[in-house]
Each structure stands twice: as C-alpha cells, then as structure tokens.
Image 1 (cartoon, rainbow, N blue to C red):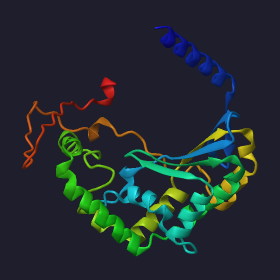
Image 2 (image 1 turned 45 degrees about the vertical axis):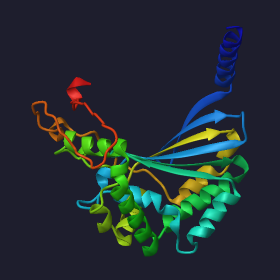
Image 3 (image 1 turned 180 degrees about the vertical axis):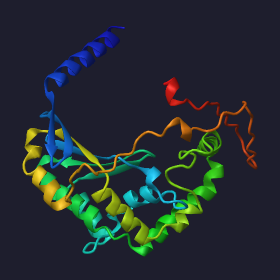
Image 4 (image 1 turned 90 degrees about the horizontal axis):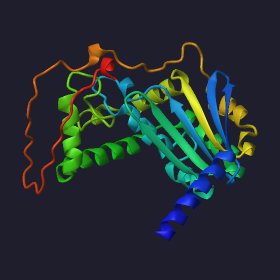
Length: 278
C-alpha cells in the first residue's frame, strides 16, 4: 500500500510540473487558424493538419476515395519515387500519419525540432506533387480487396461493418470510410489527383502545433509558400447533417448474419440518436 501511495503522489507532481511548462497560443496564418501548444520539455515537435471535410466528399460509387488519397500521398511524386520519400523521412526520424472520418481528415507528422523546416518542405512537396502512380493504386486495390475477402476471419470487424450498414441505412454514414470491394476498384489515378486538389485548394484547414517555441521559426512562410495553403471565405467546411439524413424510424428488429465455421458470436445493440436528443 505504501508503494501505491508513493506512485500516486509522483503522478500528481508530474501533472503540476507539466501544466507549468505548457502554454497555448493562437495565430492566424493567411486565414488558417493555428493553435500552438508551447512545450519546452523536449526538442521534438508535432504538427497536425486538420481538414474540415472527409469521406462524405467521396464521389458516388467511389467510396474510400479520400482515405486512399491520404494513404498514397507518399507513394511517389513527379521527382521522387516511394523509396526516396521513405528514405527521407526515415533519415530525419519523422513519423507520419493520417486519419479520415466522414466529416473531417487529419494529417500529422513529428520529429526533431532542428529538422522541422526540411520536413515541412517535404510534406508540402508530397501534397503538391503526389502523382499516385497507377502501379501503387493497383497494389492498394489488391491489398484492400484481399482484406475484405478475409473479413470473415475477423468476427469483430465483420460485425462492426454489418452493424453500420444496417443501423445507418439510408444515411451518408452507412458506408465505411475505406469504401468496399466494388467502389475501391472504381477509383483511378485521375480521381485521386482531383481529390488532392480539392483538399489543397478548397477545404478549410486548421493547424495544431506542439513543441518548443523554436519550431515556429520560418514555419509560417513555408506553409504559405511551399504548401500554398490559405483559407478564404469560400473555403469548404463540412457541417453536421440534419435530422432529415437520419434513418427512418423502425420497430426493433433482430438481424442474424451467419458465418460458416464461426467459433464465436458477436452481438451488437444500438439506436440512432437524433440531434434533438443530444
């Protein structure tokens, strides 16, 4: 019990120490809202770019388009192939990541502060020059299709997917952000180029920065010049759907999804909550 008490005290002390060393500031860079969390504890940074639209922007019959675009950004540009891009980020110890949901998308990267200028310029380059080689698109489609074929072996993921399709039928949210085995095959390199242009030029953005104050040196200029990102009054921002997009009210029902040779049962219970109920 003494060890437990000491552990809790140390945690509380660390929390106070951290709060004293972190401050929040807000800027406006060419119309882009920037939220900066000043943290001088480590010589590392984190940049998160929030795009105010997501998978709901996918064209009809091309579900998964937005997620594929973000996934394939680093697969090649006009001047660099996938290996050179990967080698660059590995050399500088940079971690990249993206997340796509229906209403928004997020792209993030992190590394050492002393390399933030070079890294940000490369991020801008892949957003501007990513050309989505046909071979990489085909590889992505094959991998995604194989994963869906093997979905029956992952009962939890299968139940989640079926539950979404049934419970949200008739709404823009019935399909997963990664599309399906049919829609993913309808997406071409030209579709991804148009999608990239849409997110670069039309979608409203917000940037979140975390790290020492030194990370701000020249960053605004790089974002404006190399990325070319600016927000205007015409920038698109996805709004929450109205209740007219809610599924029609139905009596409770049971749906059984049989899976051959299944060794477990997955049970999903839920109800659609309208905006007036939140």
